[in-house]
Image (tube, rainbow, N blue to C red; front, side, top):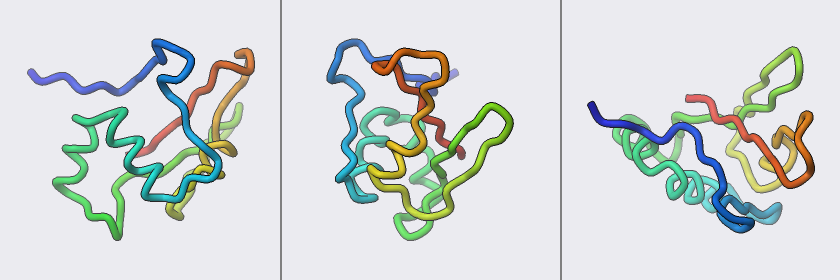
Length: 95
C-alpha cells in the first residue's frame, strides 16, 4: 500500500516557512511541494479554478473552512498556536 504524508514536521527553522504577502498560487505551490503525493492525487480530480482543498481555522470548539482561495494572510490568520510556543504552528487543510 502506498503511503501519503499527511503530517509534516519541520526539520529546521526554515523548513516550513510561508509569507503573509503570498497570493493563492504561491500558497498552492507551497502545499504541493510540502505534500506532493496528497496533491498529486487531488490534482487528478480537481482543477485550478475549483481546488479540492480548503484552509481550515480551528478554535477550541469549532472548525471553519475558508471557501475563498487562501493567501498568505489567511495562512497567518489560521495558524494554530494553542499551548505551543511562538515557533510552533499547526495549519489545518480540509479535503
